Length: 136
Image 1: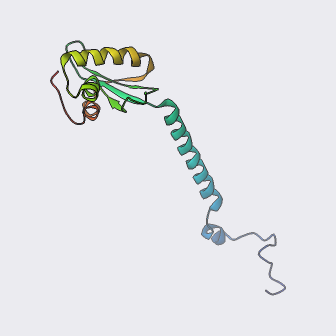
Image 2 (image 1 turned 90 degrees about the horizontal axis):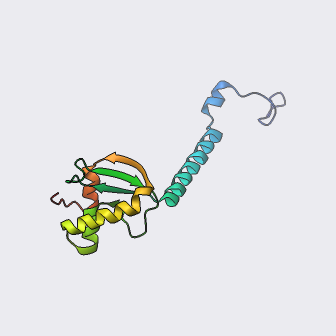
Image 3 (image 1 turned 180 degrees about the vertical axis):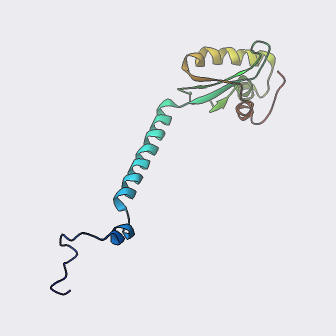
C-alpha cells in the first residue's frame, strides 16, 4: 500500500459501486431473525391452542351442515373429526344411534370452545372419515 492511499480501515467513504456489490448481511440476518421469531410464535401458539376441525354432515336436524374450528383439542381427538369419524373410531361402523350420540357428546364438549363457525366443508368431513362417505 502506498503512503498516499487511505487504508480500508480509515474513514474514507465507500463508492456506490462498492456498496451495491457488498452483501447486505445486516438486512439478511435481521430478516432471518424475524422469520425465526415468527415461526417460533406460530408453533408456540399452535401448541398452546391445539386447534381442531369438527364437521357435521348435512342431516334432518341441520339441513346445511356445519364446520367449526375449535381450541383445546383433547389428546384422543383427531385434528379432523365428525360424528361419523368418531363412530368409526369407537365402534368401527356408523349407525344412526351412534351418530346421534357422537353429535350430542361433541356438542356438549366443543360448543364453548368454537373459534370460527363455517359452512359445511365436505373435504374436512372426508378427512375425518378416512375418505369414506355415509348416508345422511
